Length: 471
Ligand SMILES: NC(=O)c1ccc[n+]([C@@H]2O[C@H](COP(=O)([O-])OP(=O)(O)OC[C@H]3O[C@@H](n4cnc5c(N)ncnc54)[C@H](O)[C@@H]3O)[C@@H](O)[C@H]2O)c1
Image 1 (cartoon, rainbow, N blue to C red):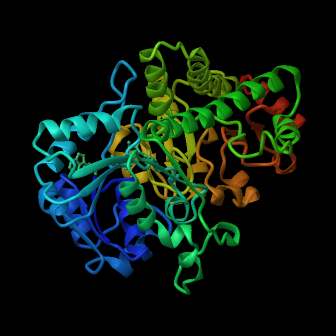
Image 2 (image 1 turned 180 degrees about the vertical axis):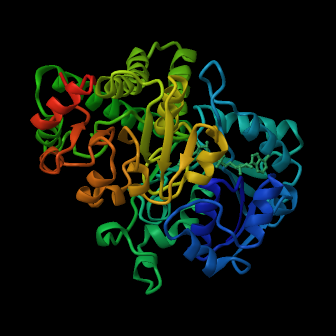
Image 3 (image 1 turned 135 degrees about the horizontal axis):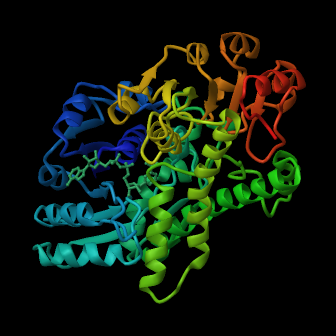
């Protein structure tokens, strides 16, 4: 099939490359000239496993790029909308990008096409897109609008797309549903997974992908409700971690005990410095606004957001507990991206924490395997330096903070890190290390929801030096 994807960001780019991988001819549209020029030259602008491979396979063959929405729509049977839906001050989603694309598409409809919303949008958006298109001259009966929400996670976006937990098709016309089924056929019937060049699935997963067909409204709600639920799971375990800290219990043990219950599950039950990224914060507040708009006060979501904000403040209090005063301190930071596997720093808790520490008068030396270039665009060069390796971060800093759960940090040579540090203080916002390992290597180690590790000899030394460590 010939497909157009309008918006070549994280979602559009991954979806477009994966649809090309499934055998479709895809034209990706974007109105950012710099991004477009890079894409046309074959550059992959985001850090995402397997995306360069898909680009290499399909660029200039089944995958092309343009800034011309009208031409792309005319040449396609299906048009995906994958533009941003950022939050407004009120918390509602800003749908002006979606509206603008709907207007552009309307003018290019001649024969029957389907318009598919992949952006995360509030319920009723499909109806609004339809109305806008009709108002802007799209002929009646010549198009259908569907919702096909995207559940990919940054860091594992390609495999999430090709090996999805489910594909949700929300449409109110059989013709439209049939076209969408056809588009995803290699995943639904499993034929893609038999292909020798198929991108390997997580843990040898072999599909086929389950498909769920719903009304457009239900599909829109599925996406918002799913993200809000996942955010709630994160806030819940963070609240539990705070109780663990108060009573001297270990949240990792509590998490294991809870997560083995199949009804609860282990995933998204990791305590830390709170959720971030371009989706959860905005989707929780957008869903809250949707609920309010339809007359339901979703107070639970207020609490999810409050716990999340509070978690960052608690982490800063931990740093203060370890270092007594913050002004003039030099901190090493491991991790800038909002999560591992990506260079995305949008709404990254790591960036927010660094900004708070800078406001308190700290200096920072940071390392991230992928996100340093992006972080350099938003952090002041006068007080933030970037290091070439995690060990360089440790050199001459007063403490090391772990702010992103990059798996490579888990395998650091702790003895080497201990040697590089001026003071052996590690404050781990992601619970990456085992407290017993940190104790063995002589670190003062503060993490989330677990008892602090303060080796006796260090306690004596630092108390003498006038610092308030531990209790
Ligand atoms: N990033 C994720 O992990 C993720 C996952 C699932 C769903 N989503 C949702 O998908 C949507 C897109 O998210 P994203 O992260 O890909 O955003 P993004 O900001 O990375 O990409 C959006 C792209 O759309 C382009 N654009 C905006 N207006 C345009 C127009 N009129 N014509 C052509 N191009 C235009 C922008 O230049 C940009 O490249 C959002 O609704 C988001 O909530 C994102």
